[in-house]
Image (tube, rainbow, N blue to C red):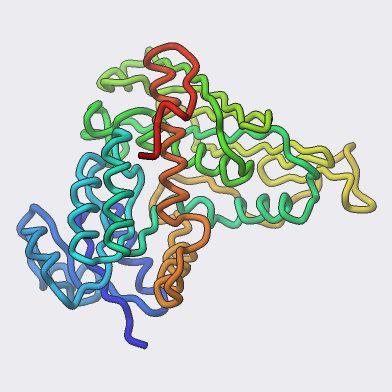
Length: 347
């Protein structure tokens, strides 16, 4: 079976990590890039070690019949239009988060992908981290019993030292603390909890540090989620902290708990609630895209294309439902009231 050819739109920091990752994915090759900048193909080949066809016109790129997949790595506001155009051109899609900055755009993306019958995956790659997989496995194997509460929190100071800072500070580019970064934590909580979210309550605030003063939106939010079956979740998204990166995970059930990389359970004879057992998995401890677990996610995406079925964990529909909760949380924070998910109809 022939390899899938990947065309990347947007050639920034994230795109570079995607290119390097695809070198280690069986069945796919990055063969083209599209950028608003004038790029020298020879310089790109020297930089990335592979030949790349260069486009400056996205519509021309979509006409390239040799490309099977479009990988969307542009700034957030550009994702919806580029996704819809690629779907209508019959291209499969790999999309960086967030999908879009408002619900209607994301709903339009969903409709276009469904109408075109193409496959799409979204870069909620933390689900593929060894830490998240270990916790998910503990839940699936019943080591925590019935999970009734979980909190997943994202602490990552995105300041002037970070590459995306100049555009991330703008409301019409970053969107919110959850949209620009904390959605990874909310998505992972939904992965652990499963079930349907009925209502959210969210509050937001902002650091008084002059470092984060340029931000046009609140950079810290706390969101409480009530599931339809009565279970609860909590997500903090703190992108204005001055501390090391920290991705906090705490899942509580009727037979035990997981705290970051530690397990306590009554369901494993010999263990108990009086001490933690260390999980043999590295923690998610970096916001650097070069450290993100893209490789297992991208491999699963390519494998799903070959099998003609949605990929596990990060298919478009799953990511869409996570974004739906994010939009509800942001509305709750803005309007200072509880928001039911039914306010975001599926259409």
